[in-house]
Length: 258
Image (cartoon, rainbow, N blue to C red; front, side, top):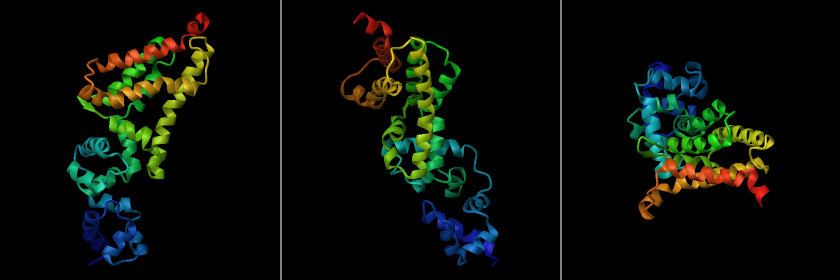
């Protein structure tokens, strides 16, 4: 049997045994050297592409849907790519072709489900709006992104903000890039509004923390508050009130009246 055919024949077994097989794993299973492997496939991803030329329709959506549930249940660090493929009902070759590792998967989750992307889009589109209009809408946008279609995706938010230090370097980089992007836009907006006299001056990162903190806490603890503490206020109304409380504290007239 030709070397290429042997690699292709043994590769599915390697994928079944390992969550993220290396080129060395495929070469060893086929009984060839890595140099021989690279003569037939330029990379691991090239092999996976040959094994599964066209991912089945809807595979990406199924993977991300299963992944966001698993992140909510167990966190990102503990997520098994092997288990993810099983839960999504797709082959490991399809999974690794679409998402070569956790960094790519996490980036896909951020783009699809996290509040960072819709908040960034809103900031870019409405950066000229006054804080009284924009800040409550930012709070509502973040809430809607986490609570959409009757699903709560707070687990992904926890992974973004609280699991970063425990992630692999490449996954941490994906989270850091996403957070840095939206923080940069928010800091620029707040600094501009402070300079214009619309908000009282203070360090913009502290101002941002004082805005995000209560809203993030509400989003993360809302399921518990509803179940155990009898919270019955609408979610968007709740985060709007929190944003308006922040606006009152940041009103330049508050300092002047004191």
